[in-house]
Length: 371
Image (cartoon, rainbow, N blue to C red; front, side, top):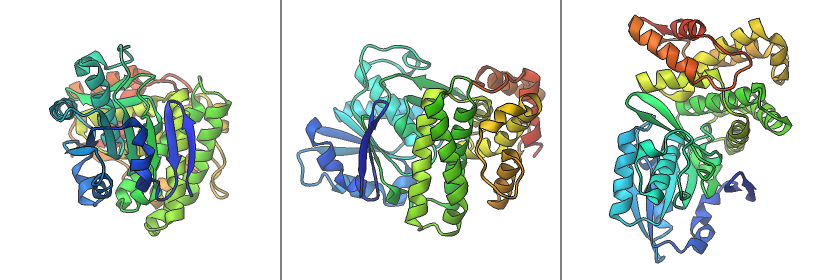
């Protein structure tokens, strides 16, 4: 059973098997040339092939672009734009996680406006909306499939592209596409979604709807993540985690993110590590800062455990139980540490209380240990 509704600028079709209906759902665009944007992991798991095969007996030609890295780089976007122009793509389908969808968003926007990546970084207005983009997420975490944001690494720094037209035109959220996820990618994705939800609930520019979505996403992740890690083919659990990811994505899209993402993106650009892993490392430390300086604000977060007295202790217990690392082993010079601290400070978004450069520095030191 599938459900269809509109979120932001995205028509969302949700349900197991929804990706099989892709040809019928996009027929009204009458595409001639489609660029399928993906990556090596998705192709290796056999997830792109059914999408490509669906167009075999249609008038639409498909072309693959799979040069997308985790934490996508400017070079990936430039290469994708070149490939799209080469095949005269009039539409794009992104089949993958947040990295693939973010890359496809940037390609679609640059392609439509015949401009450079630097022309769209930030929230710069451009004359034309992006080329039609269909997202088929294969992970549960990024929320990119329901947001107006794309994050691309440019010269070692993660840069956000924000545009009110950057929502995928259509998202096919099929939980079956997440069944092949490894345990680590399942956990990282869930913690990414959890962080989106927590920061949306605590955001000072949040509203009742973003907080309601965020709180529900938090409860669902705590209820289902461990069981999915133990039973990776549990379609019901996978469905619930994908629902939580979408809810968290909707929540942060309107309420914004906070300092956990500022810290994670600073280190993600420098070390090229999984975003969800970095969120897991920084979320407890940031919540400790809030607990010290604005404990009443943490009362917005839902109760998720009968044995832990606070949300923070429940979070720490969850991270311990799913065996995520507590620190990174990296050599970091004083100059690099200060640069990352300043970067995180300037990118900290909407937190309960602003973090100083010194606090950002201390939080980075607490999770980065000499190798």
